[in-house]
Length: 295
Image (tube, rainbow, N blue to C red):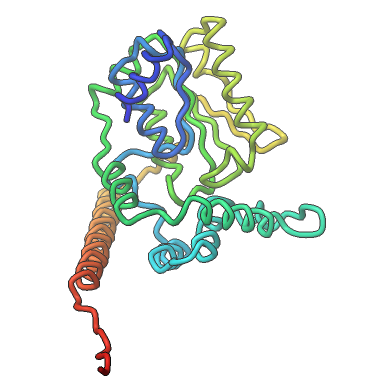
């Protein structure tokens, strides 16, 4: 898909471009930047995460409920309800828009959109999962992006339950000093919840590129919490704790358990997908019962 984007740029005659990707599109943008850094004016990554285990959403009761409802959704109405809770914060959905809530308005829009295009096919869903799971940005690719002649902005919603904030922070940290981390009050579709702040962050990036701002100047902006809820941080927020050997062992054990939990979830996901495949095969192979016709 990154090569497709390059081919489109060639077709349009664009030698360079400001590249902006959201979610899986941000993964593609990272690959594009690593493959052809000389073709980018700047790179903006919105609600980005890495591949593999980083693709797993935040694991809690809410997420498990959403995952179960997502797998069981068979109608546009059922899928719309799950998508709304996945894409937006409850605060945003409960806002009043005229005589009703934003949830009601968006629900109608989602049902209409899903009904017009149809539910995502199993092949499409599995292909998307496979693309995200196998996505990987190597240390060499990160070095290529970091050493290229363009600035990077990593923009993320603080309450994103799909692409976890800590992975975006880590990516921004790896891309220092050319990267700036921008945290906004919102969820996975933070560009819908906070369009003005996202647009401002993009314009800041483009203006800095045009004014040939140096990487250190770009990333050294002091932390600033605006009235709209944006937090621009030159360095991803980290917490350092002084611990003894027992504390270090506890931290190591916690990290190990976290990895085991993600591995368990992946195995469960594979089993569920395999079960769905087998059920579909049985449906196809099962003979159709035809009623006898009396002569």
